[in-house]
Amino acid sequence: MRIYVDNNILVSIEDNEISIDDLKGFFGKNAHFVYSYIHLQELMEAKDNFEELKMKRFDTLRKLTNNIQIRPIISIAKKFYLVLEEPESLLTTLRECNDITERLRISANNFDKVDRNKLIEKLSIDKKRINNYTENEVIAYLNEALKVNLELNIKELINPMGAFMHEQICSIFNFLDFVGFWKDKNSSKSNMARMYDASHAYFASGCDFFVSNDLRARMKSKVAYEFKDIKTQVIDWKIQN
Image (cartoon, rainbow, N blue to C red; front, side):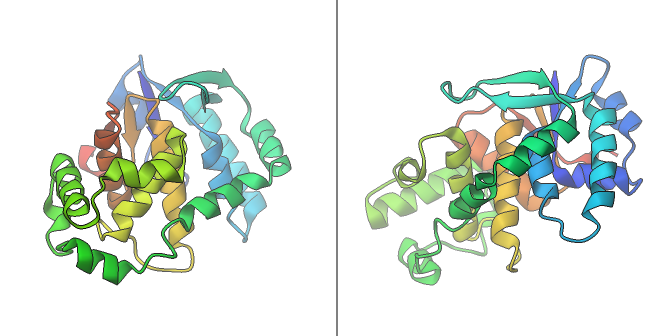
């Protein structure tokens, strides 16, 4: 059984709000926690006291995951494999691949040129009700709105934005946020933060459970998983305790 935790869970561990022993105990002895390069890529966004944060994060990842990293098999959708790699080594590699952040920024802005208010008005989306729908209802509701008003569906909207699963999950997160589904609070960092949320959801799709204390990320992940027929279960750790 594979478990993937969101970045907010790592932060809570480091703030002594969550115990690694409790996490491991909840899922049992057959559970294997894994990490991805996104955990370190997101950490690199920190401008202040990065060196201190870095050492804490290395220690947290080692204790939680035993250095088990999850990687995608690019040529096969929904397939991942595991490797043993020290976080320090991975961070060195990431620093040499400076295009990763730029690719995420491009994905973050793929709806920027669309007039949000006009499109929502054209689609007749009820922003007050959409958060109350289940995953299936959200997909059906948005597909119907797109079909009636633009003669397309979510798949036809998402596919041109990237053929790979990572790109598609990022685009689903963007579209859901764009139409107001558990919309992120606007800030100078919100678009990029959403891409990190989507990226964690992508890597978690190769696991049995995705643990997150971010409500907006969880709700968008559930819809993305339903849409892409991904069986990963999304868990709110606060509810479990």
